[in-house]
Image (cartoon, chains in turn brown, red):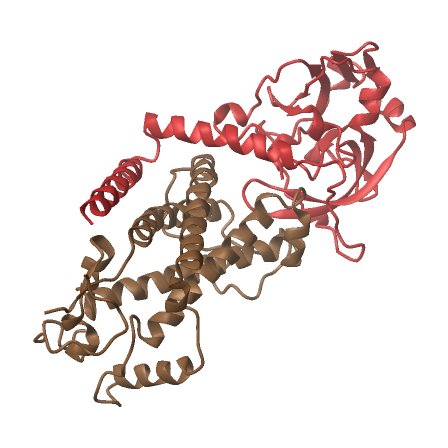
Length: 246
Length: 236
């Protein structure tokens, strides 16, 4: 019966959902700002790394209405994003949860096995702890991208006052490109994350709202790939180091 | 456990509903208050970070934008100073000063000249390089003997009613110039002739072209774009 575990601390749950809001508003307003000059080349120059130079982001993906409005949103919500990120990373550090996402030896091999499983090369779900190796790497990459976004954001917000940060990215133009690229990668990871939640482990929604997770319904227990064994029978929960409620 | 959950639900419901309301309409009145608060806070932070020793640096080998440097004005046609109708162009330096100045282009050129290759940061997101020649606003302030009441500076133009006011610290930055030359030539009308304000420390819209007056003031008086909703501080 002891298959229920308290998976996510309330700090993790609150910061997760605040993050959803902050990232949606930051990405939307950021793309509206980008649309004021939807290219990375300086006037009179070329920029080879963006195949869509000059093509704006569709309006429905943007937020803030106009350039000035989007800038106000961006420069207000950045504090929510930063404060929330610091709270999350500080919690992870002091509460020990960083162990769940920091890469370890063997993760590459485990990730390869997960990939083989998802591609139907391997029949059984590899053994895993709280997250599988692919998840771990995504959850580790996202805060790193967040740090890169904040740094490159400072670099283009204050290219003179904080010129030493801008110089980390060579110059203003490249900092702006890194800021955009890191945002695009973060959104991509977030989209894959949402897809995997609904197609592989919708039971984890409960864990990110109330904190509770039924290990008997874990993807490992259901042998679940995207859209496979989504509602598979609950089996005996696999061995795990997660502590059941007392 | 229930305390945790209640706390969680309260916090997330509050933040989510606030954001959802905001997301439905980007400019509801309550959001405007929040955004204005953030702008004030950001301005304080930006002023706190501002240093006269933090300079814009463009590598000596970097090319200038030249003819690709964007040209921007409010009027439908390029403003050109009409000497026949308005007399010889003069730059008036006035307000909270002990010795108001009225300078012709020749007078400006007799003041210490600074030539610098710097970035021009547009609010739209591009930057462009040019070599500007002109007089430091701080030298003008010294010549006019700005008083202790001078906390802000307004830069007015003859391009419609265009003007933008600055905080004193940014105006006194060593890279803030009243420029009369660009890339080795006198300014052309497209770039603000006979003289314009240019500095890498503020976004393009703060850098008034077609300059006529530099007025030192105890209070700021907004500006053309800042009155329409762009940040008043507009610093880089």
